[in-house]
Length: 114
Length: 249
Image 1 (spheres, rainbow over the protein chains, first blue to last red):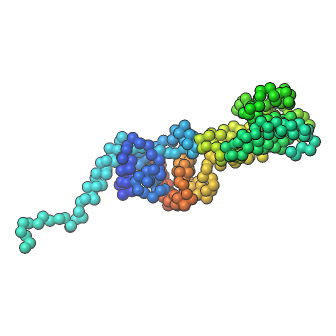
Image 2 (tube, rainbow over the protein chains, first blue to last red):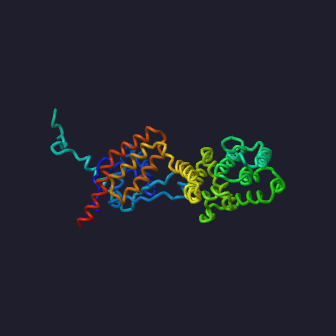
Image 3 (cartoon, chains in turn cyan, brown):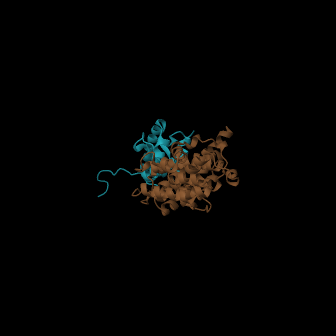
């Protein structure tokens, strides 16, 4: 199965999905929540679905017929996915916090500079 | 009414009755209900139905007016009264298709059967309702359009009424796929799915069309389509990559 590349966009999508893990959301809704431009999210969702972090289903016919519109595809994060996503987000966050090699902050000795 | 040889006095008196009893009643569009009765009768006349059927078409909603029961029987006879009540109770899905053939009924001088007369009025009623469906609330509009597309239009086609069937089909499709007005974006999205692996196309096409439907303006729909366009190669790659890997293992 592997795991997805943790690009910034993927992280934003995962964070949006983790906001309320039980809630089903459609693509455009997730785009908005993740702050991504509409229409850019589908490759990410497809990848997350492939690795089993996300699951998707068609909208209940009773609901979309009631509203008089075509059925939507709904996404939610799986239990497994939520666990992996939290780990991956934490790792990505730590990696960002790590300074670049050679730029490590050196502790300043007491009274070193005067 | 396109039938110069028709018994116009019968139709005239049916019209007078309808105008009298439906006076003051309006449709959702605000038009007098009478306009619907006349439109339905005109469609029935175009299909080639004889004057008694045109009369019944004019009177098909009379039970929704203050007209006292029995009045229609008294004025127009048992046959027309029976036809009206058959129109009201008929379930379109229960009408046997094999019994109908309007084309031969029209060319020969034969009278239509009771089933044919009922179907002609029901089809005309639905056709005019679909023409004016914009005034119906969305929930009901969708349900009526769905039934029209799945049951009524095929029924009209089976009966040989090609023009009626085509119009019913077009009007109901327009309700079910409201984005069809934005034909370019819809077509672009459909074309884009051709870049995806065949088994996944239907899913993405349907998903994108539903998403497109939630966007309020033409410019947001265009932007959405362009971004889907830009991201489709990546989606295609994502979907194919696993297929390839699965094949290799």
